[in-house]
Length: 220
Length: 410
Ligand SMILES: Nc1ncnc2c1ncn2[C@@H]1O[C@H](COP(=O)(O)OP(=O)(O)OP(=O)(O)O)[C@@H](O)[C@H]1O
Ligand SMILES: [Mg+2]
Image (cartoon, rainbow over all chains, first blue to last red; front, top):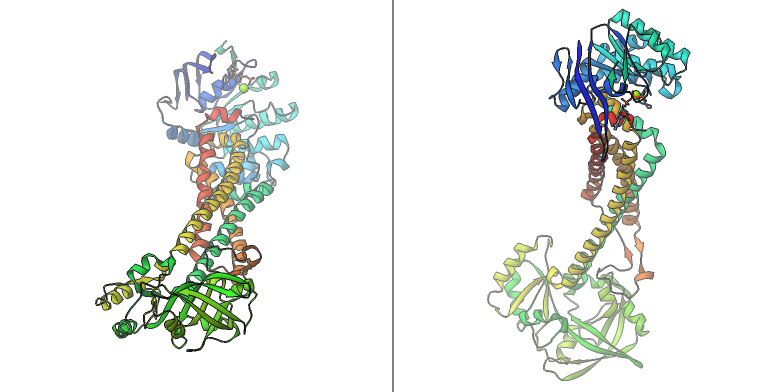
C-alpha cells in the first residue's frame, strides 16, 4: 500500500547540511499496526512527514497506493492528504476556538460532506473514541488524553486508508498513553485502517504489531 | 464557507481585546474621515452660497479690461451703456442690478482705513443679492441720500455706530479726488466674512454724481433662476451681448477664484491628513493580522496537513480581517454620522479662533457640516476592503513556509 524506495532526506541550512535519512526502503501493507522507533534525532519525524506527503524526499521515491508522489503539484498533494491520509500529532493541534464536535466535523467538511451525513459521521467518530457527551467541550476544557482522542476522531472520521501519528503518546502520562494506544489498536482491528506511528517509548513499541528501528537515518 | 465564517468570528471573539482595539482604531479613522469630509463639504456649500448671495451673484457682466485687473477696482474701465446691456439681456429672463465698485479711504474721527466701496441701486439690488436681509441695526440704504452701510466687524474696528458720520475719499472716474460725507444708517451682519470685514455700501446715484460716472457702472450682477447649470446660461448671455465687444461675462467661480484655489488646497491638505489616519488604521490592522497569523502558524500547518486548500486558509484570514474591518467601519460610521449630525444641526463656532483672519471660506464664525452619502458609504466599503486586502500579506507569509516548518513552530 505504501512503498518507500531508497529515500534520502537532507536538510540544508545556510552553511550546514543534515542528512536526516540515508537511504530508507520500507513496505507498509494495508491494515498494519506499525511503529517506527529510534532515539531522538534518528529521523522518525522526517520519515513520517515524507510518508504523509508533508515534505518531499531529496532522492528516492514514495508510492502511495501505487502512485509515485514526486512530481505532484502542491494542490494534488493537498488533495491526496485530504482523501487518503489522516494525521495525529504529538501536540494534538486542535483548533482551540472550536468544540470537539467542530474540530472533527471540520476535517470531514473538507471532503465536501455536509448536512445529516456530516453530523452522523462526526458523532459516530467521537463516540468510537469514547467522547460521547463531550462534543460541546472546547480543547481547553478537555484533558490531554481526551484531546488526543478528539485528534484521533478527526483523523478517523474521513475513513482514511492510512493514519500517521508522530509520537501520539509523548505528551501524555503512561497510563493515558496506553489507553490511546489500545484505542488505536482497537480501531485498527475494527476498521482495518493502517496505522503508522513513531515512538521512543518501549511500552508503545511492545504494543506494535511490527517495529521498524531507525538509527541515524537508516533502518537497522 | 459557512465554516470559515464561523471560525473567523470565533477567533475574533476569542481575542476580544485585540479585536476591539483594532476595530476602534479603524473606527476613529473612519469617523474622522466622515467628520472632516462633511465639514469640508458644508464649508464649501455655504461658501458657495454666500459668494453667490452676497458677493458675486450667479455671474457678472463687466468690462474685459476691468476683469483683468479686478483686484485694483479701476473705475476707468466700466460698463458704459448699462441700460443697453440690460435691454439686450431682457429676453433671457434674468434678474439684474447695477453696481459701481471702487476703493477709497474711510475717515472716522481720528482714524482712517482703506475699504472697498460698493455703490448699489437700493431699488433693484435685492433682485440679485440678499444684503437687505443681513441688516442687524438701523435700516437699508435709500436712493438719493448720503448714507452708508457697514459690516459689523468693520464697524467694531472703527468704533462706529448707527448715526455716525464718516468721510470717504476716492478718485473719480477721471482721477480727481472726491470726498463723500456719509451717515451710517445701518450695520450689516453678513454670513460672508469678506463683506463683514472691509466693505461699505452706499447708494449708486450718489456715487454716480460724486465720481463722474455719468450712468456707467463697474458691473451688472445677474441672478440665474437655477444657478446650478450656468454653462448654457453663460453661452446665452455671451450671444446676447455680441454687440458689446468690450464686455465680458464672468460667473461666480471665476470671480471667486481665490476661494476655489484655497478650497482646493485645503482639500488636498485634508486628503493628506486622511491618508495618514488611514495608514495608522491600516498599520493597526496589519499588525493585528500579523499577530493572529503568527500565533496560529501551527494551526495553519495542521490545516494544510489535513489537506485544506491554500485559498481556503487565505479566505479564513481574509474573513477575519474583514470582520474587524466591518466592526470598525460600522462603529466609525455610527460615530462619524453622530459627529456629522451634530455639525449639521449645531455647527461649530470658530469665531474665537478665526476672528478677523482670512480663511478663504466665506463662512461666518459658525461652521456647519453637510451630509455626503457617498463619503459615508465609501468610508465603510474602503474600511472593509482595505482590511481584507491587508490580511493577504501575513497569510501569504505563512503559506510560503513549508508545512513541516509550520508544524514545528512553537
Ligand atoms: N527542518 C529541519 N532543518 C534542519 N534540520 C532538521 C530539520 N528537521 C529535522 N532536522 C534534523 O534532522 C535529523 C532528524 O530529525 P527528526 O526530527 O526526523 O528526528 P526524530 O527521530 O523525530 O527525533 P525526536 O525523537 O527528537 O522527535 C535531526 O538531526 C534533526 O536535527
Ligand atoms: Mg520527532
